Length: 286
Length: 262
Image (tube, rainbow over all chains, first blue to last red; front, side):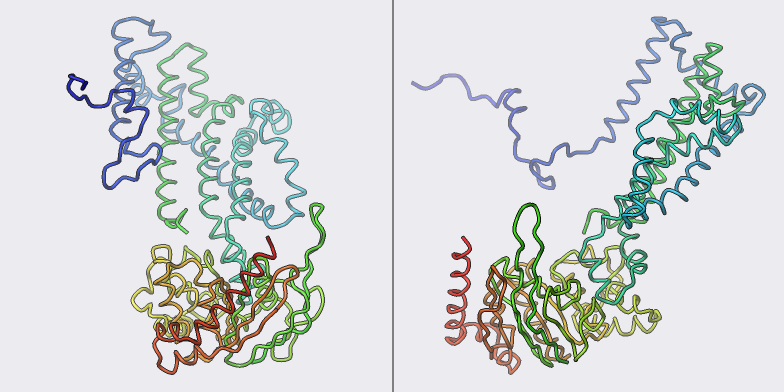
C-alpha cells in the first residue's frame, strides 16, 4: 500500500538537525558563516526602540532609566555648558590623555620587555613571576596602594591605567616571539645572520600580528580601568563625570558618559583594525 | 668545492625515560664540485639530521665535517638551505625575499636588486617582483626559495625535501627546472627526498640510508640527470629499462627497511 498523502518537504526539526548542501560560493559546513551587518543594525535599532518604548510608556521612573531624548538633551546641554565648570571637550581630552599616555608608556616598556622575555630565559625567569602575580588582580584592589604610594595626583591615575594595559602587551609580545617558523629563522642564520639580525628581520616582523592584537586588547583594558582611575580625587574626565553624576542621581549623565567612552574606544578599535589590515595583510596566510 | 663528512655520529641524549638515540652512526660522505647528491631513506633514517649537520645547525657527537678544508662551525652563507615550506617571509614581496640573504650581508639596495633580478629571471619569476609571496602558488613560492638560496653564491645548495609539498605535475616541472639551474650554475647540491623516482632522476650520486642507527647502507652512481641534460626528455629517461630496474632495486631496499622498523 502506498501513502496517499502528498509528499512534503522536510519539517523544521529535520532542517535544523541536518545541514543542507550549501550554495555555490560558500563552503559546506563552515561554522557561523554569513554576513551579520544588517542583523547588527537591526539589533541596535531594536534595543533603542525598546529603550524608547519603556520610557515613553512610563514603565520605569526616569531616575532609573531616563528616556533617549533626555540623554540627548543632557548631551547637548553639557556640550554647551560643560559639567562641573569644565567643558565637555576638556573632560574628553583629559581622559583620552590619561588612557593614551598610559597606553604609549605601556607599549614603550611592555613591547621591548615582552620581546626580551620571549628571547631570553634570563629575562623570562626574572620578570615572569611579578607580572603573572599582579596580572589577575582587579585594579580596584591595588588602587588604595597606588594612592598611598603615589598620592592623589596624575601619577597614580596614569599608573593604574598603565598597569592594566601593561600585562596584556607584555604577554602578547612575548608569545609573538614564537610566531616565526623555525625554517624562517634557520634561513636567516644560513645567510650568516647575527642574532640581532634574526630578531630585527624575522622575529619582530612575524610577531607583529600578535603585537597588534595585544595592543587592541590592552587599550580595551585601559578604557575599562579609566573610571577606577578617576575615582582618585579627580576633578575632570569622563570617568569622573560618570562617578559624580551617579552621586547626584543624574542617571542621564551617567548613560551619556558611558556612550561617550564606548564611542571613543570603538573608534580607536576601528583604527587598530584598519592598521592591522594595512600592516599585516599576510596575517594567517602563510 | 669539496665537502668531507668524516666518521660522523650524532647521538641524541636520553629523554623522557627513553634511551639515547643514535640518529647517525659513522657517516662518511664526500661531495665534490658540481655533484648532485641525493639522500633517500625510510623516515627516521637521519636524512634531515645529516642536512642539519652540513648546514651547521647541529654539531656532531663525534667525527668532523669540513668544507674546502675548513671545519664546519655553525651556519654560513657558503651553504644555502632550501626548505620544504614556511621559510619565506610573507611581509616581504618576491624581490625582497630573493634579496634577503644579500640584505643580511649588508649589500646596498641597488646591488642586491640587480643580483636578485638575475635569479628571478633564471627561475622564471619575471614580472612578479613586487607580488606578495603569500599570494603565489606553492610551486612559485618554492622557486622564490631557490632563487633566494642562489643569490649569495653558495658553494653548495642544501635542499630539504624542497618539492615535497607540491602536486605531482608541478613537482615534475620543478625537478626539470632544478636540473636546468644546476647545469647553468654548476653548484654542488645535497638533496633530500622521499620519492625514489625523484632521487634517481635528479642525482649524480644516490645514498640510501637506513634507520636505527641512521647510516648509509647503499651508494649508487646515477647517469640519469646527465642523460636529461644531454637532451633526452624526462619522461623518456624515467621510462628507460635501466631506470625502472634501479627503481625496483632501491624500492626493495627501502621497503625492507620499513618492514624491519615495524
